[in-house]
Length: 304
Image (cartoon, rainbow, N blue to C red; front, side):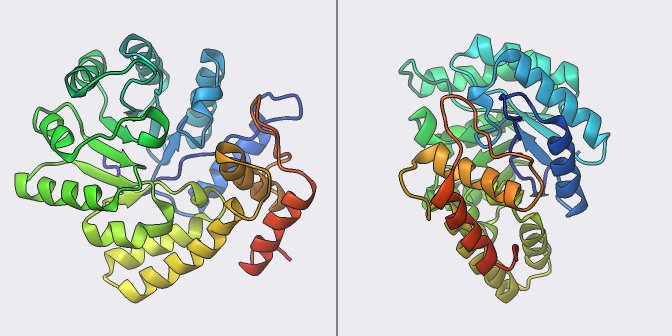
């Protein structure tokens, strides 16, 4: 199984009382697949993994596997603080039908490169699935260096990287080192506003949170990149960059509430989600913030 192309990190709809909205979720997953995405990344940052109980994680995996029914690969985030907890989540994900596992470095405890490398090695020993490293220093406060990733890829520990570091220089160096080493290491960018640059650097695909709102743009961009139509790649990226303003037009919101909150609000306005309810303690966008998101959607031609 290959993991290339557009693999959006699936946003999770909730009911008014905070339960998984299975009807909206099925509508959303089918919409993404119908748009031509090349895989789904569930239980990532956009997928509320750190807000989810073990029971909720199981439910999301189970429903995703049921809905997808083998139509596209499913990558499952097993993000947790320590190695034993991550391994527990990884084994459950494998049991329930995941096609690949995505893990960050351990966090909360202050650890160095030696412990982080051992963390990934132990995860790989515990499962029989491709393992992706999730590089997201804004959340785990550790940047995975290209040298560390290459070392683990050379050992067969890592099969891929989901890079949400925002460090384009590091990503370029990682792509160069992979080529120089001749490694079979999948590189996916989560930096949705500069996917065009990542493709030119050698990325094998993108994991765009904004792809929840408008997946077709990223799918067309991927095909244009494969065809070498770089003018079209840039044109589509400019459109996506303008649409991404839904995450910055709100007032009084920060981080997850502004980002995923805007994605959920947009999906509600587009009729995909029934609500824009957020996981506790985050509150949903309301009033003028909903209208601000709607204004960006209108400018993008997605809403009348």
